[in-house]
Image (tube, rainbow, N blue to C red; front, side, top):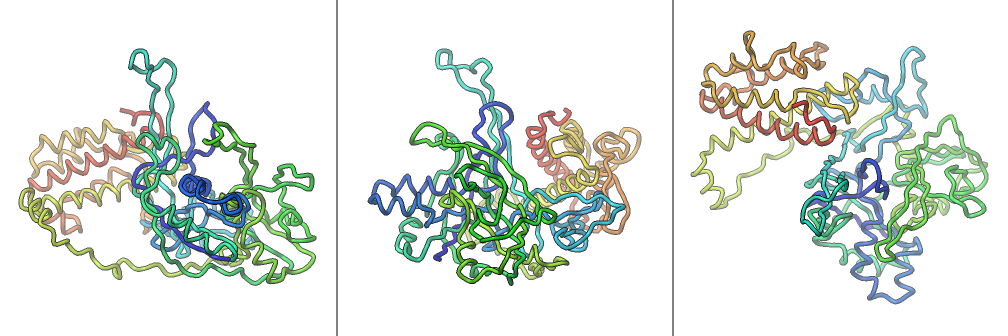
Length: 513
């Protein structure tokens, strides 16, 4: 089997819909479907191929356009296995990081949960081999159709697009059988460069940069016995003995021979959707699929040989040409009784970015001052840190992601106004001290609690005060004079206002302004 990895960088927001429904809320996929890559390649080379070539590449399943999954460098993340759980109330992430804590993750393929505690399934996001948890960022924009007669908003035609936010990177893998090796280069050349993917490509969505990269050799199947564990890397579409869609993954339907499913150690989630064919201007047949991340355990009558394992690794089920049916066979994330992650690169080992020797940067620094640039960078780092704290507090409080949580736009606006009109030497007291303080630990939004690494608790208001205290351990704040300190608070407040505005679009509550 020939493999080639492609890194996809989103230059604009991209819309990949979870369904083609036109009523109700719009939901976006958190990955790039292989169907989008197949369509992009077909649009450029389908007419140049003869009938046999086009069938082999785009219809036979012998050439497979894998789904684009979140990545870090050349490491592709895996869907969160549905056999992974954590106890309710125990955050599986390490404090102040996106690293999963192995001792807090229960792999129920092997572990039995404590009867006195409630296990909760880890469903969302993706995991790297070093234990980092990745969750692709999405955004929602509301739009309205324009009536051609008046040039104004059409009546009762409001709609929204949920999209993957620009700037993110995904890694997809193209696969083909050995006899199609010559076609691999043709397909890669058709995809490389700037391309348009997803819906609403004629508007402001869909521009991506695709580049060919080299990755590590594919993971070989783990040791196999008559007991087989499969992790679905992509959705799986199956048919029964009569050719009808089915959601029951019997081993015979995956080409595994005689055996049975171990339902006690199998975790499945499913969905249904219909594909829209732009060329035919209509819907295709409805697909019933088992979701990526599902875990299936089989008890086979006999172990699989090397040939059967290679066939299974090339994909199973229907619609393999667009990336469905990709599985991992007995991967470490399932077979380990106690999870062991690879060591991640320490931050101290990452080289500092060098200042480019560019005349434009030198001119900008002469106009704005290096100090102002440093303050802006510090404000950006603090805003990202505080948004992380708010999300951690949300998880600890058990508040759903579509519900408003934390300080509102009005509260951050009050902080911004105080920084505009209060001298720097009195700004901290204006924000945090006295009855008329802008940020009170008892006020709604600011009083949400956060658990520190040492086991103590503090409110979001106390966390912000600690971050902005003039006598803090952060030397960069201590070194600021009064004017620079006020500028830092203003820029932090503006960035948080921007972040809250994005969150308010998601929750639909307007930030409680």
